[in-house]
Image (cartoon, rainbow, N blue to C red):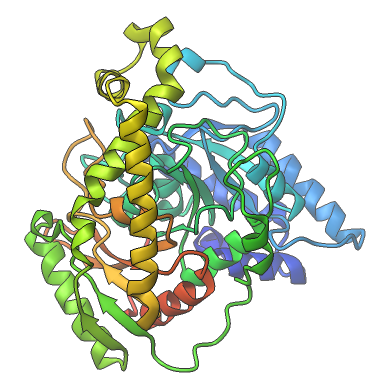
Length: 453
């Protein structure tokens, strides 16, 4: 094992700790060494306490030695996006307004993590209040480029080998886009599977929790551990939680039936992303998948406008009081969103919500003949800027309709930065989407790589 312990995927680390081949303390020490190497360059963490992490790992090892029941994530250190409340640990939400804020209780998803034996290694950097104004994190492949956002620290930490699992959130493209830019797995499950109580809200209709890992199976394991009803989250779907069977992933009985969807914003993709998508479709066909190139129904041409109306209107209602009291302390980008959202009346919001329900129904019918959709996750490589986090335009539709979506590494662009392929499934049929994504991952066979430091 030696110095390569930080390279273990989540499933590998879980198995080694469970079987006693590796202790949680030794594993955590290896991750902390990796963090010491990469953190001065990528700035993925907003809070990290080395001594506290090692003590949590020792507690996990003592429980293992005592023969206590072990959860699915026993002994695993995890990065938590800094809008997700953690008891006794700062949760500052990427804003000076919340500097020094230490919640008394943890978010539901953190409590689930701890019930399954995992623990908080550190808090990862978020864009301001999980919107657009970036935090300090840099892309681990090239520090001059954005890592994406708003879950920027979580994506960079997993891609760099600092943690095998990190949690994030997505209201538009905040899991899928940074995962694509940083070259790791980003998985946003169907809405309602992961509880949101204890997480700073932005748009109650659109906010969803997601995970970052290094393989599709790792993502399935992580979400399987975190699924559970959340009585304090109005969107939590107890029935869907009970039906979800994500782990272990069932073996694929046949190559998947895929719809290759360029989407209404295809023209905004950079040439390298377009070329990679076309090449990926060809590779999947050659590997045996049935891939039909089709477009979404015409109604989806309005999806981006619908999403914007909901996100801006609800964002203004959620953050309006904060702006009224502290406008000068908020970024220009966030102030513009709130100002625009204030002008959206209740009737316009209700209309947009009704249009969303129509699009959800149309996507369900569209997917009836396929196991999953494949589509680009981003316009291209991570932009060479740290002033913004890139365009989420290729994520918008799937967040709007609450479908499960996952991006996986599929190649490199002209600047040597990662490019991805996004896989989308039917709402609350995450197991089928994940099975298709695992097949695609194996067919593309992209090597797991870590950035040089």
